[in-house]
Length: 202
Image (cartoon, rainbow, N blue to C red):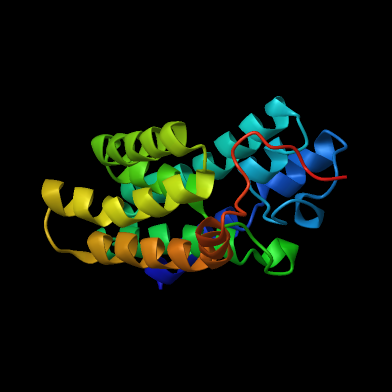
């Protein structure tokens, strides 16, 4: 029962869509109404408001980190083991993808996944972030960077640890993240994908 409660709590934390919340605070258009229609930092950046984009990125990343950190540090006292922590990780990620507070219309999970990985292991998170930065800098496509980082994340974990519940959770997150980018994949293949820094169309 405690494992279920921690998972539900993680899901609710994940359901806080910082792209929508921050956009309201800055009196910007709803990020679900322009650009890629994705409530995430990259789409918020299309408004030209870098502060809002940064806050969105930090918020989405922080909720992934916090949910896993709470399970790691307070879970053992309630009988939560490694499997329970892995469930919390996937739960907060699912909350971001399908947030109960926003009619189950969520983002693609890139920043939240990074926050989760950083909580699991700092080096794991940094290795995945470095992969994203290298691809993003080289090609200027956030989606391409996210896709490649998602592919490498489970391999990075396997290099550092062993096959366990967390590896399964990270692999599941990678698969879901790639699936959420299917439109971006089509745009990349057709040359229509928007580059990082492009503003929203009026």
